[in-house]
Amino acid sequence: MKFLLIVGFWISILIGNQECTPEQAQVFSITARTEEEVEILRNVSSDYETVLWQPAAPSHIKANMEVHLFVPAASMTTVKGLLNKHHMTHKVMLSNVEELIEMQTRNDSTDPRSSATYYEKYHSLEDIYDWINITIQDHPEMVQLILIGSSYEKQPLFVLKLSGKESHPKRAMWIDCGIHAREWISPAFCLWFVHYAISFYNLNHDITEMLNNMDIYVLPVMNPDGYKYTWTKNRMWRKNRSRQEDSFCVGADLNRNFDANWCTEGASKRPCDETYCGRFPESEPEAMAVANFLRSHKNVIKLYLSIHSYSQMLLFPYSCSYEEATNHQELNELAHEAAMNIRRYYRNLYKYGPGAKTIYLAPGGSDDWAYNLGIPYSFTFELQDKGQYGFLLPPKYIAKACNEALTAVKTIAMGVIKKTQ
Image 1: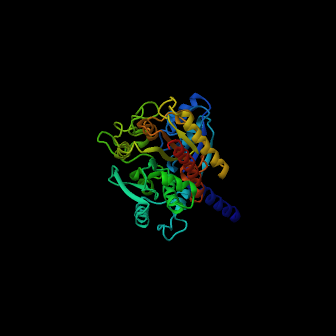
Image 2: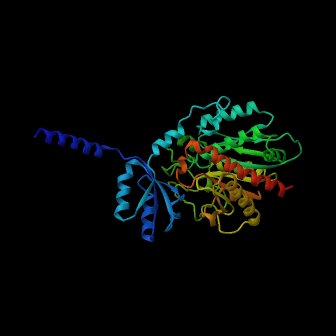
Image 3: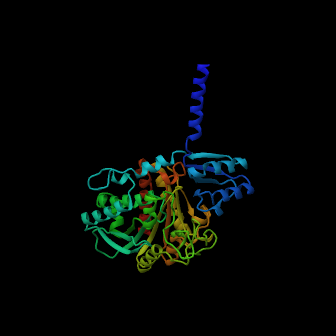
């Protein structure tokens, strides 16, 4: 009898522990096979505090498309129940979300002067502003600081102008990072690129040629409010942090806020949606600041690059329509060569092509707007990976992701220099 009581006691402990184990946030991979399942998946990804990682909006979900969905711990039982009810299978892509976030934010290298691994870590907005100050102090002969505006929450929008020592009139290129807050590998690349350009000028042929023939404007964080919010409140946040009197929802998608087929199919007029296009083109101060700067430099800027993640793609106009760019063949050749060089040096595959035909319609994008402004070579890079970690790419992959992007930047920039001589 005593033995049975002891056994019963331990069974009750084990069952109790099992029941009390809290659910963890996870990322699911789900593929809808029928139109009915597509509608169910669109509904699930629009509610229950889930966050759609891929594609960018529920309206883009199609039959037989792999969908990546972040499910918070509080909604796990409900979402699993709905999927099971409709006999929809899912695969757990990431079961250790909290651990990955902690890994990304762990940082003991806040001073680039004293840490060899500074550029292989993610950095908070405050750290990035400190890095900007250190960079301009240490390299005044190559780096100039330009304030192009401020964000909705009055964070400064700093651009670094990189120049070589050649004094003749130059063309220019532009790189922006961090337009979408949760894409942390993007600002990491801008820091990596600036450091590389300064360190290898007169040592590496390509970067020396680029800086001798082009001024390079780099905006490390285009969406500072959203980026800061991902560090302090919600790691999955995408939009900026603007507010409107007539809505309790916060933020607009800055990459739907430019005047390129603004707010047509592929963007949303609903302020609560991830792809909300804003009240009007350039309604957001961050988009307006970039547009104003590019307008004032449109005669010299020949190459526009916007850095995003994830999915490993090199995209060019158009994303706002299925129309082909006037110089489609040139853009395609440059993207092809860049993708081939990444494959040759890093054994990694990048898809390339016009945005709308390669992924989906995305009107109001900065790359299409810059192209229509008259900047003849305009690209959006989607960096690592293809979904294994998605937006939670661990720091150990930063170096490879940035080297791949650097290879593409150098390949395309060198091609543009030849074409515009």
